[in-house]
Image (cartoon, rainbow, N blue to C red; front, side, top):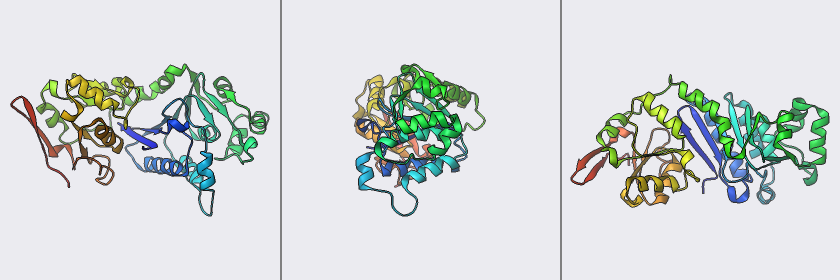
Length: 336
């Protein structure tokens, strides 16, 4: 299972920590993967904003202690330091959506975010004194600088949990929202994305491919919200499908197969009768897990990244469809 998921929607990069069975406790590999994501986001001119959230009922339980003991810090830059430096050097807004527990690093990492929206039942804790550890990510400097020595000393030296209301009062959290509406705290960013169409481009071959498909034979499955997807399609002049599965319509997003299974259901087909077009590794995994064959399209990822796909095409121009009897005939000019 991919423990760090990414999904790009326009100029917004969504990063999801995906280890819910372990309360999203962080391993060395996860720290390194997150660092790579943030470094790449900083170098990608098409990315303007990063949204950081987590799967399941917790934001992060902090370090995975078992992994930490197996991979203790050694010479050179540690995985935690790599992530901290990547966040410090990232010159684009980072928005965190926090639900449930944010413990240790799950709290201190938030000091490097520009906006933090927390559910009303979110719980924070700095338990370093209880573990005999030094606070990480520069928090022993940044937290006193943010809300004063007295309050920071209480949180660090006592190591007691505190709630979202206090987190907002001391300036750790931007806003507290109902648990069911944590994502709504990000709506202002979505509004900006809908209005910002200057960088909107239509992928080569998209218009021709979608126009060639009968309306009842295709659907869009996306991690973006229904509202953003509809607005983007309209702004791009692309046809809006009769069947659309968006990220806010499913409980488990990609790489879980649920979105593609729902899409097949709307089409009245089994997933095995569907062909999925995907440009992200998590989407390729979701389509395969649903039981569909998958065309990996090299618009944002390399052939190596998409290697699990059934076929790989360099662009949508290499995918053509035509009605053939009662079905569709799909022709793919593969890159491998």
